[in-house]
Length: 76
Image (cartoon, rainbow, N blue to C red; front, side, top):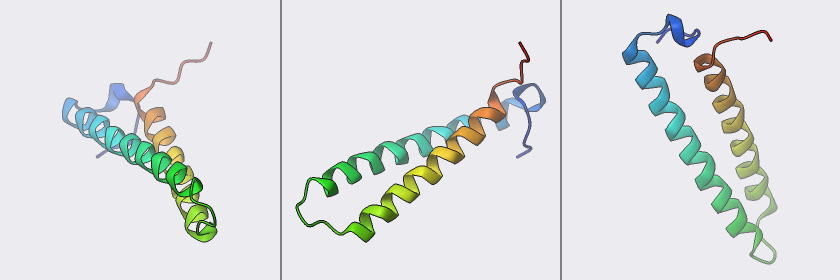
């Protein structure tokens, strides 16, 4: 898949990117739920919690990167 703005993507590449974004967003939501559940447990594993939070942040960065590929660069 080429990386670039939407105008440079084929329809198949755009659908592929949209599907990837949806999977990443779903994983981000799932991690959010897992983090909340883990935090509700007294004496929860802090290392596991930190790993989940780091993974969630990484997903947020990837989502932002791919969203930037879809949205055109408009200078206002």
